[in-house]
Length: 367
Ligand code: KG4
Ligand code: ZN
Image 1: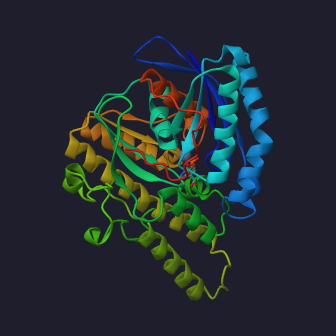
Image 2: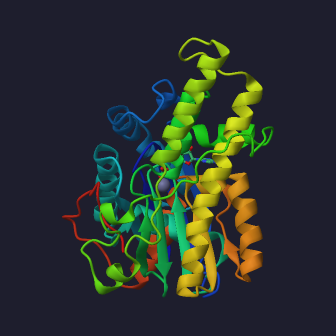
């Protein structure tokens, strides 16, 4: 079985060909994975501009899919199915992928599979590492999401925690913007943090101060939801505010005008201290969930899982906990269609195909 995957939920147009191997331990192999990034377009605006994103997807989608077929050395008729990201994401962007996938599947008379974007991020772990020990606690951490899932059996994703405000990647991007560092901020802060002192600034540990006053994690509330009631949720807006206040105070102390960059040394220290706070918060909650559910493995995926400190500390904590930790390859951390194709193959084997009335859903829930 060979599937074409299409991903267009945010600012990357991606197409990939992924095939089944026949080996249950390592079920899928990537035959091609083409990503056309729009980062250069959105950089000028300091973030993704939805209207520009959807227009660029329209320009790129045909070429990206053709290139994915060429790289995989297959023709249209060699495809057995088509998988596409149905949501969540920017509706205009999603529509481009969904319409294109439907047209291809219709013309080729092949099954169409609808994939949840975060199921794709979770399956990127299996695509890269092979099947992982279950139950697993998986942290999906990106620019749009910071969610914790319990995966008890293959393809079953249960939401056990999420951010109540900003996603971790969003916090990275906002802090980078504040420091005048450019977009996207995650990789830049990651690099600068290596030259800074992570104890230089005592930022508060990002956590929920009043869990009870916020909405419950699991919606609608179930017995399971009441049991874990916000226990594994995240919050990053307080940390972001603390960085804003600190930077303002330092500018005032140094007599710098508003928006003037701080000295390089201080930017490195702020980056390192901020990064320590984020990584500790992410891993504290993840490993607390690992203990709570007695999980047999830990997974971390999504754009922020490229972070060097997160990778190193996750490995150290997992070793202490006696559990393996799984990460995607760097190419599979950010948005890509290979992970969507992989999740699509899983769904196809479960017999879950989509109808021709499939609609993009910007707020599609998972688990
Ligand atoms: O998964 P992704 O490509 O897109 C979303 O679905 O959001 O994630 C992009 C996010 C951005 O916020 C970016 O700053 C962050 O991932 N990111 C990083 C690193 N590389 C990318 N954050 C921290 N450290 C990194 N090395
Ligand atoms: Zn993503």
